[in-house]
Each structure stands twice: as C-alpha cells, then as structure tokens.
Length: 367
Image (cartoon, rainbow, N blue to C red; front, side):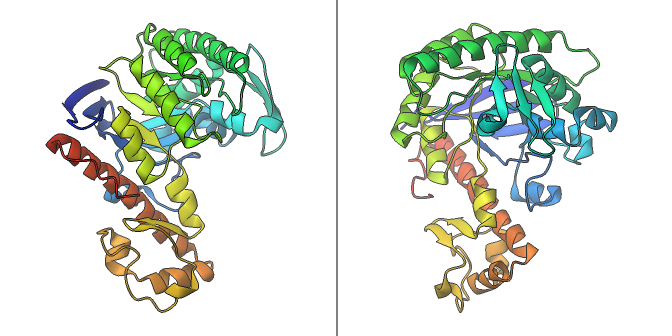
C-alpha cells in the first residue's frame, strides 16, 4: 500500500480532525503521538513493548544515524525497518534540529551545514541532498526536508532569512527526492514551515510550501524556548495556510495537555522526548498531573502510580516499588517509568480520537 491520508471526522467543538494515514508499512490513526527513537531505539523500551503500548509509528534521526552506525551500513542490512526490527511506519527527522541544538559545533551556509561530530570531533557537511540520500538509504516512510530551524529570540529579518533558506533547501530536497534511485523504498517527502514567532511569516511559509504540492507538511521551530502563547499563534497561523487534505505534523511538542491543545487547532501528528526523558528522571505523567516518583512520601505508598491508568505498570507495581527502583538506580526503573509515560501519551491520543469521533468535549483534564 502506498501513502494516502483520509479525513474521517471533524470535531464539532474545535478544529480538531480525525484521520487515517496509510503508509507502505502500515496505517496510523490520527491525531497521533509518535515516540522518539533518535538512534534507532526508543530509550528503555524494546520494540515488542512499543507494539503492546499501541505505538503505530516511531521516529529516527538522520544526523545521529549518519554518524553512527552510518546510513550505508543500514542500507546494506536492508534499511532501518529491518535493522531495528520495527515493521511499522518510521518518520525520520532531517537532522536540521540537531544541527540547531548543537549550534556551537556548526556553521550554516547556503550549501548546507558544516559541523563537528559530537562523537569524535570529525568534520562533516550535511546538505539538503545528503539528508535526502541518507533518509532514502534508511528507507523512511516519511522523509523530512532539511530546514534551517529558526532560534528564539530572532528578529524579523533573521526569521525571514531562515524562512528563505528553508524554502530554497526544500526545493533542493524535492529535486533530490524526485531524482532518487528507483530501487530505494518509496516513502514520501514532507516540507517544514519556519518563520519564527511571526504569524505573517508563518502564513507566508505555509502558503509557499503548499504550492510545492507535497504529500504532507510539518511545522518546525517551536519549543525552542519561546513563551507558549507565541507557539500557539505561530502554529495557528501556519495551519490557516496549509491544505485541508494533507497531514499536518507539529514537531517537538509537548506535554499531554499541549497535545490536546494543538490537536484542537488542527494538528494531526506530534512527537516529543518528554515522556521518555522525564521517565528516566523519575517524573511520571498521570491523569492527576505529574508525579515525582523519588519523593519521600511514596516510600510506603502501595497504590499504583496512577489509579486511573490501565497500563501494565499501573496494573502490577506500586509507587513504593518504583521509588525503590529509581533510588537504587536499577535499569528497570527507566523501563517501567518509560512504559507508563508512553502509555499515558498514547492513551491520551486514543481518548482524543474518540472524543472527536463522538463530538464530545476534548479530554482537557489529562495533563
């Protein structure tokens, strides 16, 4: 099966949409949350557990997989799906955000970004064409265009320059993707809307990307340190100029409450490292708010982490035990905490889709 997006329902109380995204490796129900597996692994959770938790798609990252183990090795071993034993959809980030987040190690030029590896200090240049080549070798279902992630704060001229470079790079990515060898797996290319925190620039970028007639569109450059209200306005402005019949992916957000909020604006796909990163630091997301499992008051607490949660962790283990594992620095602490957090995120999306289908109020108390 090829790539196809279908809209199934529109919410009666917001701009949320219920959809279904078909890819060569399976179908994704939207709105969806995508666990982040930067280096070919979602930290502390193995693939069978991801399937049991209900994950339908995960992310990989071009920058990290390019540096280790290398895209040619992964191609030789049958592509990323086979290499990591994940037969379901995979979206790969272009590497643009990693270049942004490791800014002290890079130099952005028109040709691309020259950077020093954070692993061994070796000098590399990542270009739009190389990013596409790497993602084609990985065999991604959804390939992201290489973009210039606008920092915050940025002046309007700086945001404009970043937008224009992102547009030029998007055109080069499209040309490279169209010219990729026919033998490569048939994924699809998404463009990325930049423009900083300037709504007019966001609308312009979205409108210009729409003219490229891509299979889907992402909104990047949020969650880079800006106030949340600015993020909302930037996302709302971009969505207003994006096609109704194409999937919309908001990159790098957020808390469970933010997922619901952005879905209500019309976002279909989201990802974030928060559930896995916070789990490793002992912070659990629950229906009653966040819970720091290392807190002394849980030492003798025999109740589950979240009494309203039906995940495997909450059905079996107590807060006292999870606290003991965390303070003892047991590997199992990261594993169980991560399973719970991912279940909470994925279950939030399940309830969100159900509410959209039934025209109910969105589950805004799940944060």
